[in-house]
Image (cartoon, rainbow, N blue to C red; front, side, top):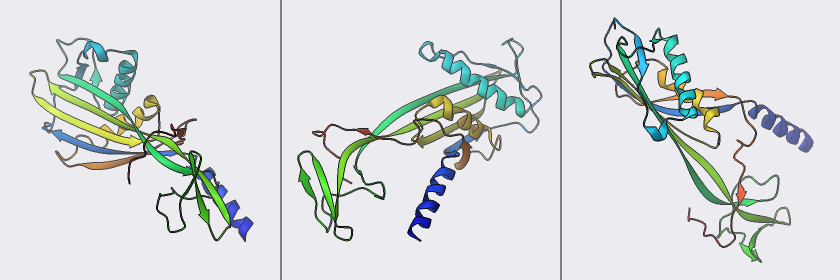
Length: 226
């Protein structure tokens, strides 16, 4: 039975690695006309600091989603009925944690466990009386990546028609790997109920290095209290 349980656990890990769920919080405000006559649009010129190849690649993602909704991109600003703006950001939020080196360890070790907490050099040990074994733990850094995407659609006269903000927090490091899901989330249910927050879950293929692996931290660096 013990070996069967190990096999089931291993199979579950393999299946969970097939896809990563991108969970986004989406809030859209809109004053969308019931039957817009002109659905042609141009992208607004981004600020110089944001005018990058990466930025333009995400504009293509927005354009593809808008095409599904019947919008048509044009290169003539004078004739376009709509103006589309876009902004995105990614913030790395490192978190220091204690991690055990035992492969069957299921959680962090806290300084005041009822079984005791001992230090040997720079690394603490956790004693498990049921397994008669000491688990060596070390301080590591895990990274959460906070992302924000905002897309706006205004009329030719400047009237604000649609403004959506998408936020996401995940262990996936590569923004280009996540952005298609964020853009799709922004236009899911377009234009939607104005001002009502909702959650959109989409699955993306896993990518090497996006499994939440932690980097060793400096032994002298403080660990924030829980």
